[in-house]
Length: 454
Image (cartoon, rainbow, N blue to C red; front, side):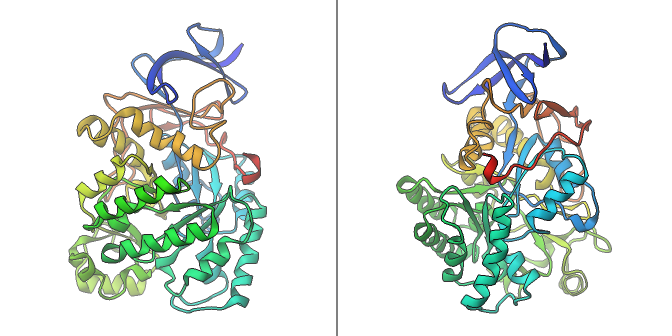
């Protein structure tokens, strides 16, 4: 007898380029049967009229901070939007070493989703070793940072991330040195660019140079917040040409026209508004005593001085360019989700249903099969998980998201990221139902996926 039978749904078969109606039976955390029969199972889910998708794989987000206590915060938001596997440690930012995060997962007996982690370069450069944002350092310091990166890689990190804009003192050669910490071409490099808007094309060229020098897979992080200020067409032409010659170079993007980062970061140095052609009122603060407050210059400067770790939302990007990044033939959907004390940008909780509701059903800018591929198989291929995730076939991991295409939509909004999504009926992680009708029913089936486990 099987553990769970899902019958009468349609699943995306990317090899055929079509949706296929079939019944799926799960056993011991795996998909054990795909076909027309209805074998006996302990539990049965009727998926008639619904899509049974591989669970969404978020290749770019920011994991929990263990210092805030043993609890899952953003992982719950991930699960409720259909994500079954997420990659944290992006933008050079991590909240703790990989080993400490794994220890929390063990203490809690599991997680609502599966987690993979990158080792964050800036975390060790700035937070651990105390180097200034604009400070340039030499080979002796590079080696110290490398030792921390290697420890994370030994713990199973799947690669290294860089937040170049956050520590402008980082040189291209410093990044190349760190990227070569281990001679393993299956590792992933990801980078938050050196500068956005008018300098975004030069930043992309720098990342191309880094990838070519290392040979490793390279992910341009959240392209929308890099180039959706008037540069997207040129940025995509440059990335597409590089990808054509070298498929190891790619990008991720999210479906909102505002970015979010900490208020005290270098992103908000003097002159940033002029660069974007925006005003202080385009900045939204997310926590008390300024929760949901639009800035004036006085409020901005006071909040930045007193609450540098507060997340701010900046409405700086053009909607039509967001759509260009999402609908481009290459590129993956990712949330860049980050929260602080449960507050932040709605992308942390609504990215994937937003794409399926807004860009697929409502605006018709992307077909459903392509959108799902960008959320599932493509990131799985990128992470070399395609034999077990991002696909529906016997033997694959039973990570599934069941949704209603006619109703799926994002609920979270700026100022209220806890509003529930619509149309996501079930989320299944390693064969266990974790979300049912937006209700989180099990927080334990998720695992840490090591680089060595793939």
